[in-house]
Image (cartoon, rainbow, N blue to C red; front, side, top):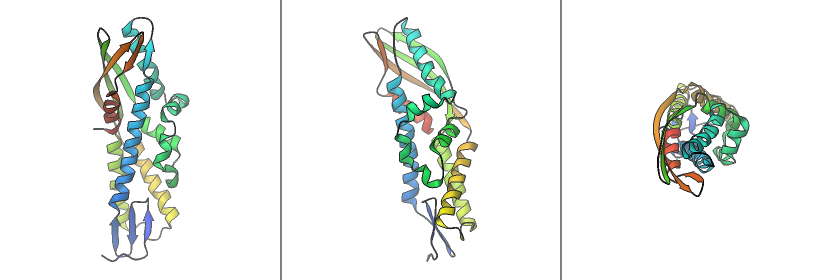
Length: 213
């Protein structure tokens, strides 16, 4: 297929009078970047979940509650501490999207419950139920809407900047419209001295919950 008068749509599509060509490599790169961000988000949270003093059950429960309540309430300080600079790697600003707006839209509807804490000496397992928006679902909705728009010919007369803004709008629409899903995970903990630390494998479990695997 010969494509003429090429215009970029959200760094994913090239549009011409005779058709649409999807740049799969760039599309997958955006999806990977968002998923890596979710894993980094979970990893930072993992290393933050430490506590000491009082009973073991209370120490673990109080610290997990403290961290997850910050996300649930969309507290700016708590969320920013978890995000750090990792969100900048997404390049959302090129689509006219504010990082804070994306994060709050993604975490809207987040909820959790600490269902059970089983302690055996210096080892423990925390059973959590998490409710959050799936990154996989957001990306799938975004890419589907972007494909439909490109195929409709609506982008044919757009400049690159206009197309980027439209792509950003569709991305945020996907984030806002994606319903939260509920999943259950078990997080192992170990105790050293008077400090409980979540195990190194927890970032995988938390990351999978955020990604939606």
